[in-house]
Image (tube, rainbow, N blue to C red; front, side):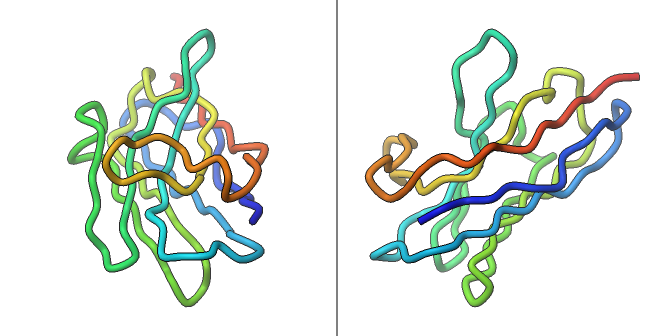
Length: 121
């Protein structure tokens, strides 16, 4: 499977953005999908993931500000981000994720290019 992220951009602190991930190809199984991010000089981290039936989890740093939305019929996973902070600046990626560990399920596809979010005044 392949994953194409879009929707990033430059936004002021306190602003909002909605990222979208289009999944192409087949993922053999109802795997959780996650949004990851990688800030300059830092390791990639999981910020949110969701099961196929809607159960979701969030990193403490984004809880209450980000919402992950999965549209199973459209093979799309969105990330609605609000009250953005400068520390949210990163390249954001979507990828299948292990629900328990939060680790990416690398055998299910290739990482996309990501979409860059810059939060700055």
